[in-house]
Length: 485
Ligand SMILES: *Cc1c(COP(=O)(O)O)cnc(C)c1O
Image (cartoon, rainbow, N blue to C red; front, top):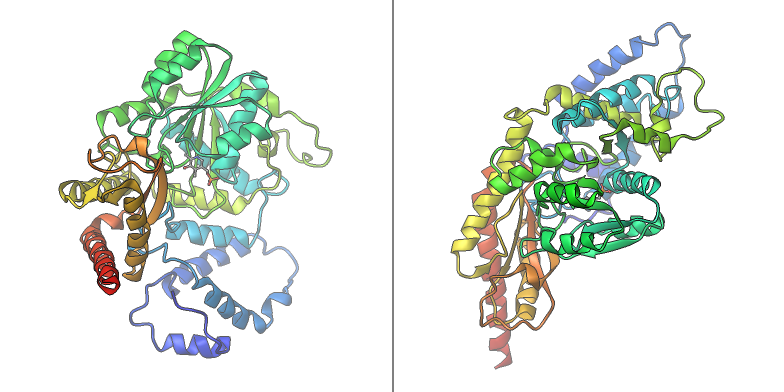
């Protein structure tokens, strides 16, 4: 990563201008033309007002300070680039970036119609499209800050409708469920995961038999390994034991549109129509800037739990205000505008361009997995269900393998390939070589989230850099032992 230089901002900007042949393009002047045209359209909507210019924004320091900001922002991994194949990060779609910037000039607040009339309407349309993707024509739902907020609302409603009853989630569910339950003062228990990182349905049934369970959190794509809990099998248990089902689809939800999944995974997604609530994060796979999660409830009647008296919020309309069905108060209307614009461009349909993009990510993960699986230097726990690949270098012990993972992570970064590392229970590696010493309970592995469609086109690049990084690590190791002798 380049360090910010000590040069003045304008000098740095001038130097950068002369050396842009090889730099990746973020937003360009053509994109800004779209934005300035749209801004003109927007501002003519207010042309009846007497002229007013905000003098503060015209200050000449703004350019220099923005350049200084850009210098600071260089200290990031290149999330937008296909060689960033680490954590769950991808750039928002161009139309989302521009629509967000456009709406931000108005800065509407989607808490209430007074603060965000247009963007509240856009939010309702966009959220209805998300609900329709899961087969819900009727629902209650809204955008929120992210998956954690969405899950908080789901468990809050769960607690309101069945106070004191137990929340269950798998050991591979998102770590915030336990914490959210603590915040809500709801009892919480973890259910073991099986050897593919999914909730163990047999263990779940045993726990359900003992009674007192209010809600089961079903993870539709775990954050660590992309494993999908078998929702279709859990539906059968609900017939017997009666509990709420909250589908945490923060990361995986959009894969409901994708047709190149394993049959079991497909069945689980098809069952989402029967869940009681769904959390989905447009800011993960939905091409949105951060600050865009979504909670959906199948029964619009849960709105009764949200009733509250706000003395100043609701003057202008007898319509439903989004603020009346949300735990958060102020929320960015710009997030709704961005999501609305994105879904206008890329509809949430099977075989549409958006679904094809997700299918490419999935294909990239499967291709990388296939290469790792046939190469004897590597071990892999199981085939990816979505677009996350977990792997490690084979070694004499779990601790040696874990050390290699950390070294390969660094060596790959030196080759501009950015992976992630994850600590996983060794139980997920059911197929460990028999002679490998199990000297630790957790396994530090390499983790690659191939969530950009371009990852598929770059797979040869990614693969050759992984192999080269392994060689780097092996060479430096023999280098060390030679020096010791
Ligand atoms: C990312 C994630 C969350 C948390 O969502 P944020 O948007 O980061 O708050 C919850 N559950 C799952 C399965 C996730 O992948």
